[in-house]
Image (cartoon, rainbow, N blue to C red; front, side, top):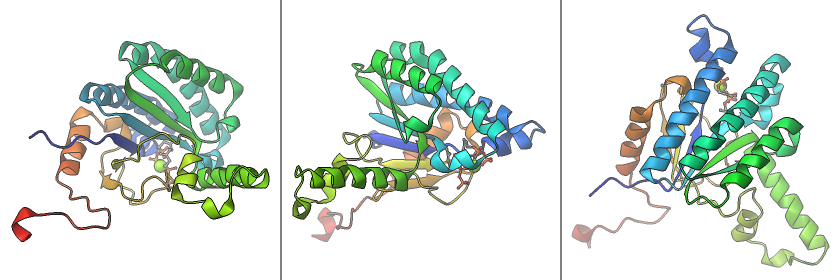
Length: 241
Ligand code: IPE
Ligand code: IPE
Ligand code: MG
């Protein structure tokens, strides 16, 4: 039997700065090298038939970095999205973005919109970039939207349940991530998809994001295939019955 393929893989792409510093280069060189890994991994996910790949590319908290770095990241993002549009179309991939996108420069938002529109009917992997994204911010935004509906009488507060919250997240139709990969060894979530990953399998690798290649992705998927997911219940084992 082929190993179970995660429907949704989410990646905290960390370690670009360390990759560059280890080579005596400026941090921004690490971000450029990281963009190459995005291309490789997205294409491989599409080839494998993964339904969604969500990449944490820029957090709400990353705005705290020096302006030179955030400005460089925004320019890189704009270039990358424009350059990759054709590749996404060729691979029949969809494209989307989540986060407080209104904080992004207008020029970046334009490229995002163009790519979303150009790929919206494609049947293969949904490549979702988390940009100016924070898990807590997403929950706050959902609560605000629900509160507004309560105020206008569209939602009965007594009827609010988990499904109500889920339906007001940035991308309500996304399947919850099965596998969350973090590169560069840090054992934390850094405010990524807090609501959606409550039962995701976590995989942390020391490999820095610019070094992350197809074989590293395969290793993570194989490891995932060996996990026993219980969701709080018990796994049915015929021998034990
Ligand atoms: C991840 O790499 C990319 C972003 C957060 C934008 P870092 O820039 O965090 O790299 P390190 O953690 O400093 O090595
Ligand atoms: C998480 O990496 C955010 C992204 C990968 C975009 P950070 O480098 O920002 O996380 P911390 O600061 O080490 O927690
Ligand atoms: Mg980092």
